[in-house]
Structure formats: C-alpha cells, structure tokens
Length: 371
Image (cartoon, rainbow, N blue to C red):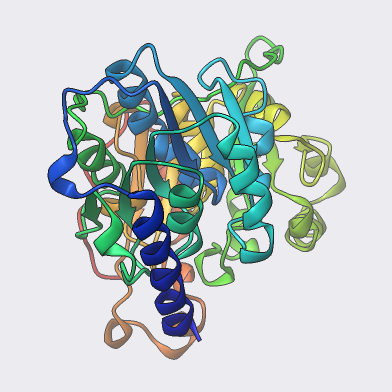
C-alpha cells in the first residue's frame, strides 16, 4: 500500500509544481539567502524531539531574523507549547486525514523553507510543499524509502552513526554552524526541591518496545541493593500511564519498609512535570527511552542499558563524563533461549549497581559478549 501512496503523492506534487513552480530545483537554492519564514518538522516521539534540538539551535542561529514555525506531534506538545525557541507551533499527528488542517495552519505563516528532521513519508513532504515552501530539506529516517526524493532540495540519510549527527549534517547543507551537538529542553519548567543528603535514583521501567525493557525483577533486585546502601537512598519511578503494570509488579516485589522509600510518578506527570522530576534525580537507570534523552539534555547522570538498540546511534552523545552505558549487542548465537526471548536479561543487577555507584562516567561503550 505504501508504494501506491508515495506514487500518488508524487503525482500530486508534480501537478502542483507545473502550476506554481514549487518546490524549486536543487540548483536554484542559494545557501546565502536569508529566509524570512521557516517550518521545522519534528512530529514523532519525545526522544526524537530532543535529538532534533541541536539542529533546531543551529537553524535559529543561522537565520536569526526568521519566523520559526515548529510542526510538532501531539505527544510532545507539553514540551514545546509556549517555548521561547519557536514563534509558532502547529500540531500534527503526521496522518493523511489531518494533513489538510496542518497545511492550512502552516500557510498562515507563509514558510519559504521546510526542514524535516523527523516525520512520516509521504505526508511530511506533501504538507511542506502544499504549505508553499520553495525548498524542502529532509533527514531520511532508517525506515523510510525516500520515495519523494526528487522534490527535495537536500537530504541526509541515517548511515549507522548517531542520529543527532545525521540531523546536524542536514542543516549543515543550509550553511549552519553544527559544532554544538548538545541537546536542550525547549521550555522553562519549575524546579523541585532536593532534600539535603538524599540520593535519588530514578528508574524508567518501561520503553516503547517490550523487547527493550530490563526485566522488572532485575529492577526489584537493584532497588533492594540501593536502599541497603544508606537510609538516604531513595527510588523514584517515572513512566507514562501505559506502564502501571510494570509499576505494580515492581512495588509488589518490595517489602512495606522498602516501598516507603519509593516515590512513583508513573502516569502522574505532564511533560513539564516529568522534566522537573528527572531534573531532581541524582542518576537515572533506563533503557533506550525518551526519558533517557531528557536526562541527558538536563545533564543528569544516567546508566543506560542497550541490547537490541545501539547506543552509538541513539545513546548519549554529549557530556561523556556524566553517562554510563552498558551495551551487549544482540547476537542470537551468543544468547541462550531464555535470553533470546528477553534480550535485556543478559545485563546483570550487580553490573548496573556498579555503574550507579561510580561518581564519574565511563568511556564510549565497547561491545562485549554476554556473561
């Protein structure tokens, strides 16, 4: 079905170009031009938005006088609404049925240039073109075919390196300075009080894919060892409302006294509130999640666990001294049947505890075989 959608989208853009002459050719792009209105597309998840922020900063620095309109997904609205980094925000779920509304909203700002950092083909290119953009630049995602490529002025493709680098390489085509690769949180948020002496260890129990979840029983084992370190150690749980099952299983594994030292925010926070909670942690234990990227952007220490995902593509990409990465590449022949069913189980509790207790971060992750 998707090839048909892309073919149809190409027909629509071809007709549009015949009558209006847009989008322009690659040869017509002038890197020295000062565009007055720019649309930036980032319509997917929290982690994607945060990994796009270095490129967003670079665009704003390159075009300081431009009106910047962010096309944002509804799931990340709480992290961009009212942000001083954008003049306008258009919310769109990158679906075909809501595309006309997004186009109508965008056309009010007369964008001349679109930079698609993360969205969904072919609807993103259609929306950018039909909103009136003369030039469209796009970072081609790992799961995309670039079926609309002939209408794009410039592209970069994920080549196995870090996703942040791929986005920065795209905006480099615009003449942007891409030296700063640090992520940032787009909104101001209220700070939480940090009790004197408390050591707050955050747990992100769930991930976007169950295969990327560290087993709950390992989190239970880890919590017991952390809480035994001192009476000042505490566990802070974060996660969305879909993760109550993990939360309940985790709490059921603790004694009543241990549960008293656990503060759970699972399903209880907006994105600004989640930001404040993560900011108050001393360290966050997490898989490959949006919360991990939030902690990295906040310069909160992390211990991140990777098996089926690759930290060289989506792991920490800044402040190496703050982050510990445990990476066991998923190689089925090295895993027993139980580990193949639950790949993250190859990471042991004591290994994670050791990383938590290290005040400084380790080196860039190195592949190892499972113990």
